Image 1: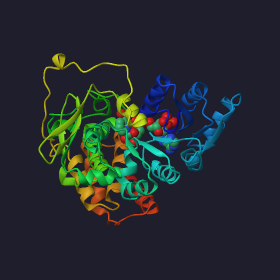
Image 2: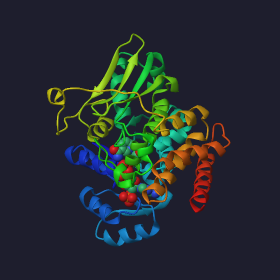
Image 3: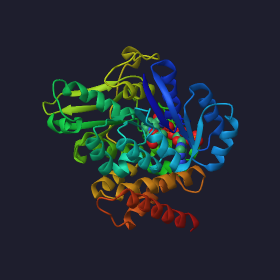
Image 4: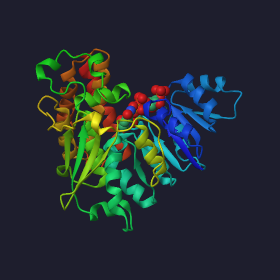
Length: 394
Ligand SMILES: NC(=O)c1ccc[n+]([C@@H]2O[C@H](COP(=O)([O-])OP(=O)(O)OC[C@H]3O[C@@H](n4cnc5c(N)ncnc54)[C@H](OP(=O)(O)O)[C@@H]3O)[C@@H](O)[C@H]2O)c1
């Protein structure tokens, strides 16, 4: 029996994780956390019987306590609650499927308590990779990627580790990765000219061609900011320099990413787009479990295509490389400015190209803090939000 706790259980990754639990009786949910979706959380508690549940707001927690008064579940609230769930003695794996930098502190607490992390919350590594990865190494815990691209890289690397012993991070350095080929679908606006993008509305950007995801991730996918965040995530997860991470636009989303080795061999992981596979792989690694669902039919597919990313029309990706090169607190600025800009765009307060413009502007004015602490990261996030809020009022 493997016991898991899920932060962000009511979201896209969270609910798909629970589908995996439904199909694998040897997985047990011991704790769940969400923001404000009380009804969804109540249904999850009734089905999965966790011993603890957490809602971000005290009001939502109070509401939930009334709804589940007939059950033996302790309802917690806020950051205190998230931290308690992260270190729960009976859990072995923490699934971080929460959005935003709110995931950093619970992830650190879980690593310190010796829990393996099934990591979907990319902001954690983007902003605090320099803290998380060495900490995980010191505590001997695994950071298991849930993002489909990083899972594909992870799966493409695993064969090379057979017969080698030692920590994964050290082995990655040893085996001679020449390049990571990080694939991107290109999103709904691939091939559009810069001028056409000026009038794009939220509804247009929310139509992702291959994946069904939360609104924020879907917009990020259309701007290539999501790919930018993934470049930074890959740098930390696999210990590769930025110039060895090549983004490849692959509209069919069949090759989920690949690794090119020092002898020129390219090993890729392919499959139909379905997040349940990477989630399940992270939960059962190193085992590969059966998974029902559509199968890849190469004859039906006919062809796979690949293109260079258009960083002129979609500057979000180039800005990510700049943020990662600057390092320190700059990736936090990139991420925080994007979060707010996407929020403004979804509310109709910012044009589509305005998202990248606003990120660039926030990065321009920021003075980098090298090797930032968690407090520095959160302060940088606050300052960036404040700057963007001023811009909103102008
Ligand atoms: N969706 C994908 O296919 C995908 C793929 C790869 C990586 N990721 C990454 O995985 C993470 C989650 O993405 P998602 O698409 O699943 O997002 P989502 O659908 O928006 O779900 C977010 C989850 O986090 C919860 N949450 C939000 N704020 C919270 C807070 N302050 N405290 C506690 N819980 C909070 C939400 O609860 P409420 O329902 O109550 O708001 C919800 O359960 C993101 O970092 C994303 O980049 C997603």
